[in-house]
Image 1: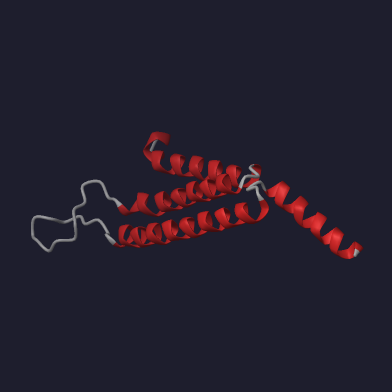
Image 2: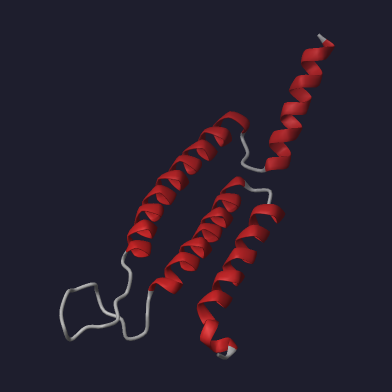
Length: 124
């Protein structure tokens, strides 16, 4: 089988690497959440890709169908997508609250403010 036959796995690896890079390289909290979302999408694709068989049909009991696709990975991924969206919404709500408290969503600025507050607390 050629490399084109594994196209979905190439896309999965690209999305995985891109999501991981965004999470590690970016300091803005919203960008980190977007990177995590891209990373999650690569995992969804990884589970869905082998679930579809070429020439397979839905699991209907009949004499004219012999090859069936397993619907379980698709159902599990639908559940994972719903959980992922809820987690992303919670993360965005936390970022909004952090921005209200610190005046910034940049990781470096938040850490610097915390260090200044700790230093001022030790000095007094």
